[in-house]
Length: 148
Image (cartoon, rainbow, N blue to C red):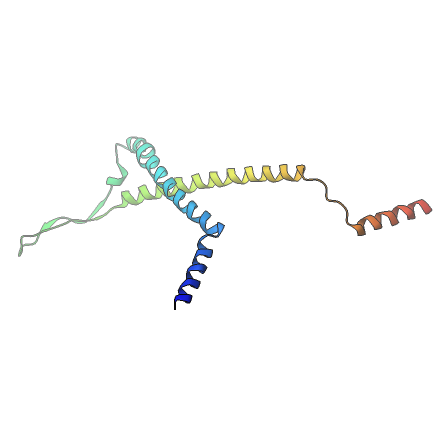
């Protein structure tokens, strides 16, 4: 049993310490923080002017009352109203669209940078040396040209 536990822990350690798993974890953490920043930009910077342009509306406050608040006649207990919070949905949709667009721009920029680096590396790389077979075939070709 102890040996199985040790083997399991070794397998888990090998899995968890692989580069791509660690990279993925870092990406998730940074993505979460990036999402919060973009949500703040949307809700605190972009949406207030849009709300002013459409008549002072704060999107998160938009809701449709499905059932108003009431009092239970038997117990006297107050029953809460039921709302359809479509404004919060709009806010979340704007957040998503801006995050998706930001990630798109970031990935596009990174691809361009990576392509430039690859071109730079290809230009700097020395020309590959011909194999012995290619050298021999070149010599044979040259000898045949000389005979003609």
